[in-house]
Length: 373
Image: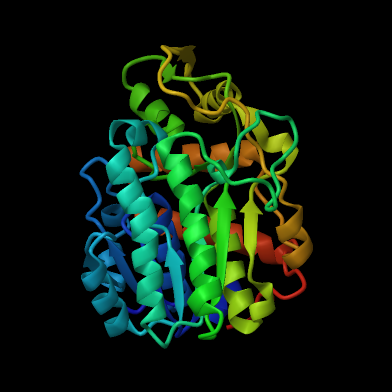
């Protein structure tokens, strides 16, 4: 593999030389997290399905040349266990999932197989791999029973997602808690789950994503917005990824840090999809505009936000790019992509910009210490 130096990313030095296993590495979040870990000097093994043709961020960032990429189905337990045992990781991030609400209505069985049994399989692989010390299951803010109330959901609130995607992720949380209590805590594996809100950022080409739709629509005129009145906790993808890394390190060093953690923006960044589209048009410039193309469809929550007091209190974590800045960073990424720029270098610069800001703003918390390499 090519050697990639940490250079000025001295706040991620904990992961330098660590063996890290990542499911879902070919997806949107997984590709960004893979690149961060590569830049930090980690020895990364990824396990996931091959990315669909229209969602090739993994290829755009040339990630395969700098990590061990294994193409496999999370539902294939034997292959997953074999791959993990060959990698002998110390830290495992589980991101592989069927992540689209509307797709879960089309294929509920496949969604449950992937999101529930896939979680069982990764936990079983962890149970059978003695090298693992830290495991993080990334779920979603949609795991909660959504009462459409105006205050944020807390980690102690009831889990009962409505649609097959949300419900399958609720089940994934329960499976994780069971394996932790039944097997992993006794084996010395620190286990946590992270429930993140909606993320935006460069390279998310999956269907039903608002920014992806916006970039595609720029060639045809107005941006089509499917549900402009729904309120969501929007944040740049680097925000939750920084939190995931923080949790994984903290519990690696101190198992008392385990738990379930909401990861989302402040109340001021919980905005409607229409407001997000306005911000995007302003950031894009020119004559960018959007139109309401709401045509109904299966149930999706209209109002959802998180109470992130727990992670802020436990680690001193806080977001650093408010939603307007998050949209701006997303827009410039897609503009660079459309202009044919070197997106590996461009993405690396955004990563360094974000984590340098974290360090400068003192996001060190009680246990999470940015270290010099």
